[in-house]
Image (tube, rainbow, N blue to C red; front, side, top):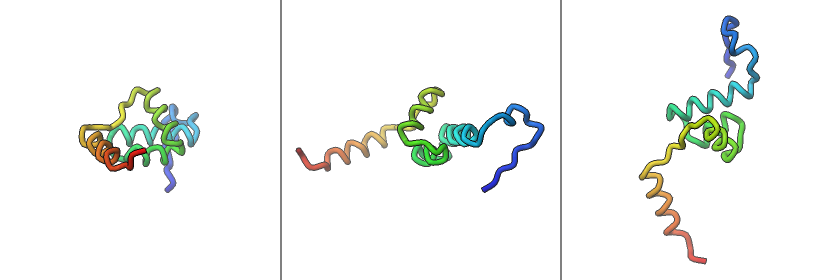
Length: 81
């Protein structure tokens, strides 16, 4: 996909492709349009680096009670050590 930015948007002229991808990924994640993993992929960052980016921008992770319950179910099913 190719995105063409209008020339009259001067604040965007100095941004690199990397910065634009990060901004898009954060925006899409905050709007719940993509998952955490998808957003990290869009930003071309590891999951951990993308989580740090969200933290730095004060964007909370989307994690609710259903996610917690799913994680607890998986943990209960793991074999004991």
